[in-house]
Image (tube, rainbow, N blue to C red; front, side, top):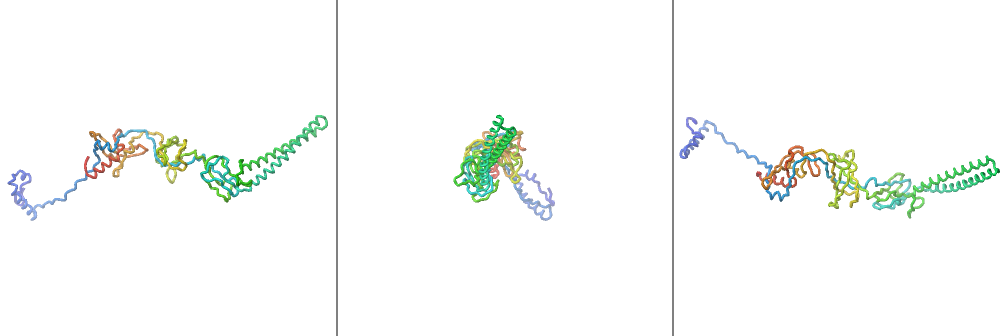
Length: 420
């Protein structure tokens, strides 16, 4: 190559020169730089060196000892019959069918409340006493009715005797037919009056029994008190009645329930409630005894979604006796009915890796294990399986237990910039 009349050898030519010939050419290089400064060919200045791209590690090889220490187990991507399964908190409560809300049956003022919340009561036991004029009127009507019954009974007996005597006289030709008929009519009227008096008395008696009950009166009660009694045996669960309060008919006073009839109430998010129907199984454990688990069967699923919490109410009666009490919170596992097949992996295999949802695909490498993070798209999740919508074919071997340890190993290698 010639620059300003000076022959400059090319790099290929210089490479072919002997070492003792290359040295004098250094001056030629200097001369060429001077010529470029004087208007010759511009010299190209080298730019800054480009940085080497960071190495992203998405795989790692684990030794047999590492696999054993981490407790890694493998599973496969496979088609399974999808079964809705969800874990939700639940609340044990008294079965509403066993609760009896006891209200006032009269208008009056509460004088005594003889029970408290938590007291166990027997059927017919007095709970509340209300001073009321209604029971006074009822007892007066009962007394008057009883007296009228006695009077009508005497008139009936007299009319019956007169009718029998008239019949004998008529048979002996000593009384006319008209007199016999009048005696018979008197007997029938007396009988009707007696029956009417008995009905009035019984009605007054029923009212007294309704207001005071059929059992003995409490020690502090008098005959002017209305006695509110429990119709069922159980435990007092709530008490609204307070002495001195004026009440009207229908106002709630107490609630009594059977503590042995319990149910489990759960609220399931609407997305996870799909597939849960009456007949689904529920397993739950009490907080104070987590080792012992109980079974129940769903009896009712609410037809609507709660507008505030966006959950669906699920109720399961508890058929066996448990150690827990009502209003105890538990953790419940609901297993729905089997549905359509779906491509699934164990839930433990799903990991979050720097913003991606991945599953660690495995290959055997001698006695060790080669793992590679593979992005996937996950759909529904149950207690132990997750639905794979995209990213993995059926039959792929994946890390099930120990996937979190595999992720930690991968992150360590990424931070170190190493390879697999």
